[in-house]
Every structure is written in structure tokens, then in C-alpha cells.
Image 1 (spheres, rainbow, N blue to C red):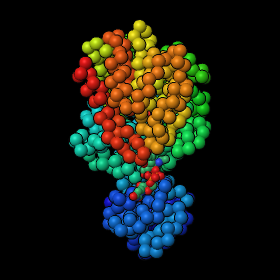
Image 2 (image 1 turned 30 degrees about the vertical axis):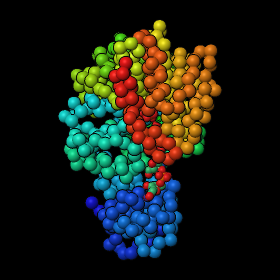
Image 3 (image 1 turned 60 degrees about the horizontal axis):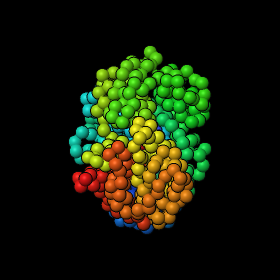
Image 4 (image 1 turned 120 degrees about the horizontal axis):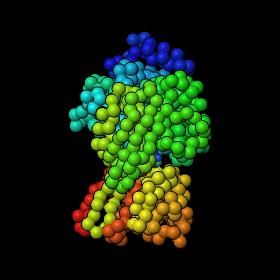
Length: 506
Ligand SMILES: CC(=O)N[C@H]1[C@@H](OP(=O)(O)OP(=O)(O)OC[C@H]2O[C@@H](n3ccc(=O)[nH]c3=O)[C@H](O)[C@@H]2O)O[C@H](CO)[C@@H](O)[C@@H]1O[C@H](C)C(=O)N[C@@H](C)C(=O)N[C@H](CCC(=O)O)C(=O)O
Ligand SMILES: Nc1ncnc2c1ncn2[C@@H]1O[C@H](COP(=O)(O)OP(=O)(O)OP(=O)(O)O)[C@@H](O)[C@H]1O
């Protein structure tokens, strides 16, 4: 693989991105593309982006980079300088070209939504692995799967990677024989143009609620919604959960660029919606308990998926996630039996994992980490087991999503009996201060609050307190293997392992 200067300038000009180019000669070509100086090798093209320091370019040059792309000249006469008006867009375009447009060889399904992306992506991947004979790749918050060998599955750093990583991983998937890809597309991915120029075969909009609004993410809710809606603009087929907030806005966005026959609206039967639209796929719970989750689906004749489906994980919100996955997988070629088998057997790390103890009730490890997910989770548990106490271990991250603190306080007040406020990725803030901010939004007449900053100790104390019929919820980290403290990823055994170890002692 190589990228020639002529191809680079043509592409950038076509997209009105090129400002100037200073090049050694017309034969110039690059052997690789990189945005991190530490990964640069001989004759790479290096992208200067984000919180960039000039020293990174020096280091990239020392490692072999012979050209750079930036939004300003970098005072370096020895390298080919390609100056653009948007380096993130340029990076996505040139990344696709360098890896020879692997997206064209994959049937692509992408999920967006404030909650449920990972769960729905795992559901869809599990189903498609059957219908494609194990030829489905997955780019999720948890894992990136580009093939079926152990070294072709690795932990993800971001929900949606940088564009160069997306195209590199897509290329690897294609070279490993994959024919389909399921991925999560965050609002940040659109904000930062990580998916610029990518068109998806199927795009799914699950839901939206206030989250990711702050100095490092989206300035306003309107910006957050706009970024999320871009998935529908960039997808041929659009699937929309009609119970989403802002349904009118979301639906109009889909309609602007997709044929009505390519839009699928789904909803729980008789559920309230913000706009009366005809529903194409309906689901209804036929069993919705802590141990058994089953839905019946009816669909219009574009799809063949009417029937009963068992869902491997509990939670009424997972019924919507499962329905979205069933529709997407059916469009991608999976039949009813494959959908049923996939939904019945999927396991998602850190999502509704349940551990039964002898005398301290059931412990749930779950990734709920904002108001919407915490409310969905706790209200479900309380409804299913009204006589048991709900004991929650939770913290809120530092230097991001500050509005989550109020949300946790509200969700705990609505549905918890006891809260152990603790540490969760405090970054550069004091976890105790964060805990006090959550506490300020808790009604102490409803919830008994304990402050235990050592997360493992908080989990142990919560389990110790629980009686046989109680439920302990360890929220927010799932299988995250670290705590982000003062800029360092400090290893952490994961909530799942901590819970299992504690339960051995009981
Ligand atoms: C706001 C944002 O998009 N930030 C991302 C962005 O940061 P950045 O471009 O400023 O990069 P940086 O790490 O400050 O470094 C600047 C540049 O210098 C380079 N560098 C750095 C060091 C060095 O020695 N040499 C060198 O060349 C880096 O590779 C980078 O290109 O690019 C980095 C990778 O290049 C990401 O790690 C970083 O994500 C941060 C960590 C992050 O947490 N982002 C969150 C907000 C995010 O994107 N989340 C969404 C999920 C949201 C949801 O759940 O819906 C996601 O998709 O993951
Ligand atoms: N459709 C849904 N509506 C509300 N809450 C949900 C929904 N699906 C999952 N949840 C809750 O949100 C948590 C996170 O789910 P999941 O990881 O699937 O979402 P996500 O969109 O990938 O989240 P994130 O962007 O935070 O990574 C779950 O552990 C569960 O508590």
C-alpha cells in the first residue's frame, strides 16, 4: 500500500480541503499514514492534530516521517508539507484511500444512541456470526474484532476510533475474510470527523438524552443531537426507535436523505411516542423478570422476523436493543432462527452480569453511568423485586460529564434504598468532592448514604449489608480494567472480578 502525492492533492481538492502543498518532487509517495509520532515508521505521512505539540513532529521525522498534514505550516523545510483547512477530515479521506476503501467490501451496520449501542452491537454481531459463518467484524466500546483468531480481537480505546484506525481495522477485517461489520458510532466521532466520508448500509438511532455535554465534548444539547443525527444522513437504511425523545427531529433527518421504504420505525406496542407515526415493527414483553426476558415481535412485510424471541440478558430496555438488532440483522440477511439463537445466547461483558450469593442476595455488575441508564436499571430491579432492598455502589468520573452527578442523585432517590458513593475515574478531581456533589442531589429521607472512597471496600461493604432477598448494583465501570487517576490509568481488577472474589468469602 502506498499513497501518491497526486492522489492526495486530487482528493483534498475535490473536498475543498487543500490550502497549499510544498513537495520535494512529483514522484513523492508515502508508505504509511500515522497520527501518533510514536507509531511512525519509514516514509510515513504524519497528521498533526488535536492538542498537538511541535515536538511530536520532530519525533515523527526522527522516526522516518517524510511528510506531514497540518492546518498551519510547521516550520520544517525538509518534509513535504500539506496544509489543509480541516486536518480531521483530511485524515479520514486519506486514510480511506491509503487502506484502499475497505468499507466497500463490507456490509456495514452502525449504531448510535445515548444508551444501548454496545448491547445492540453485541446482539447483532452474535446473530450475524451465524448467518455469515463467522465473517462479521465488530468495533465496539469494549472489544474490536477483526477476525476469528485470538490476536484479531483486542480491547478498544475509544467507542469509535480515530479515522486512520477505523480504516486500518476495516482493511484487516477484509483481509481476514470478514464480509460484515457492526460498529458503534459516537456523537464525538461525528464531532471530530472520525467517520467523515463513511457511508453505512444500515444506521440505527436508538435514543437520546442529555449526556456528553461539557467543555471537552459537546457545547450544547443541540450540538449533541445534531452530531448523533449525522449517522442517519450517512446511512442508506435507517432504523429508529420511535420512543426516542426528539422523534420529529430525528425522523425528519432520516427522511431528508433516505427513501421512505428504507426507513424502519420500531416501538413497544402501545408505548407513548412524541409524534404519531405509523410503526413498522412492534414488540411486546411476553416475559420480563429478573431471570427471563422474552418478546414477541410483529413486523411489516419488508421483513421476515415476526415471532417469539428469548433474550439472554434481563432488563426491559434490552427488549428495544434486541428488536433493533433483529431488524438490522434481518436486513443483513439473517433469518428468524439465526436471530432467535443469537439473542438467546449473547453475553455482553459488564452489562447486566448477575452473581448470586448464598445469603447476600444477587449482585449486578452493570455499565449504567448516567441518569437514563441508572434510572432504567434501578426502576427495572425495583419493579421486579419490590420487597428486596436496592443497594447501589456508584461514583462519577472527574473532568467530564459533570451533569451525571445530579442525574445519579436523582436516579438513586427515585429507586435506591442504600447508596455507597465511591470512586470512578476521578481524573484530576478529588473523588470525595465528586461524591459530595452526587450526595447533594440525594433525598436522605429516601436513601441511606455511605461514603467509601476505596471502590473494592465499598463493594465489599454493600454486599456485607445485603440480605438474602436484596439486590446490590455495582454501577458504572462494567469490566473497565483501570481507574483513571491524575492522568494515569491505574490497573483495577474490574468490578466483575472484585465481586466474584468477595462472594467467595461469603
Ligand atoms: C476530544 C477528543 O476527541 N479527544 C481525542 C483526540 O485527542 P487529541 O486529538 O487532542 O489527541 P491528544 O491525545 O491530545 O494528542 C494530540 C495528538 O498528538 C499525538 N501525539 C501525542 C503524544 C506523542 O508523543 N506523540 C504524538 O504524536 C496524538 O496521537 C494526537 O494525534 O484523539 C485522541 C487519539 O488520537 C483520543 O484519545 C482523544 O480522546 C479522548 C481521550 C476521549 O476521552 N474522548 C472521548 C470524549 C470520546 O471520544 N468518547 C467517545 C464516546 C462517547 C460516548 O460514549 O458516546 C468515543 O468515541 O470514544
Ligand atoms: N436502550 C437503553 N435505554 C436505557 N438504558 C440502557 C439501554 N440499553 C442499555 N442501557 C443501560 O445503559 C448501560 C450501558 O449500555 P451500553 O453499553 O449498551 O450503552 P452504550 O450506548 O454503548 O453506552 P456508552 O456510550 O456509555 O458506552 C447498560 O449497562 C444499561 O444499564
